[in-house]
Length: 83
Image 1 (tube, rainbow, N blue to C red):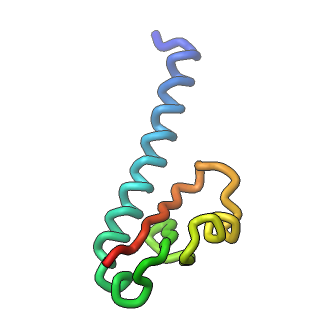
Image 2 (cartoon, rainbow, N blue to C red):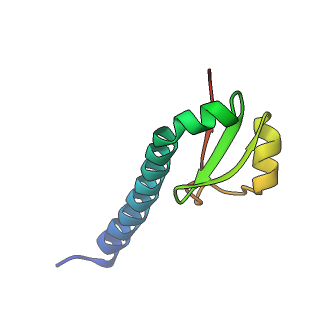
């Protein structure tokens, strides 16, 4: 018999694994579009959510402020585009 605490923990684990899967999907999408970002957004921070480009900026702080990220539950990745 599974007690309520075990069910609660399993639910949390499922939620966290879902968030990690979204992050992985966003990162894979970013990497698959890296040539485009390198061509048009070199030396900038790129924000991606739900496999979609959200925003970019030369400064990370401005980007985060514009995105209004208050917590880490949004599964948004921010990556820098190098040469």
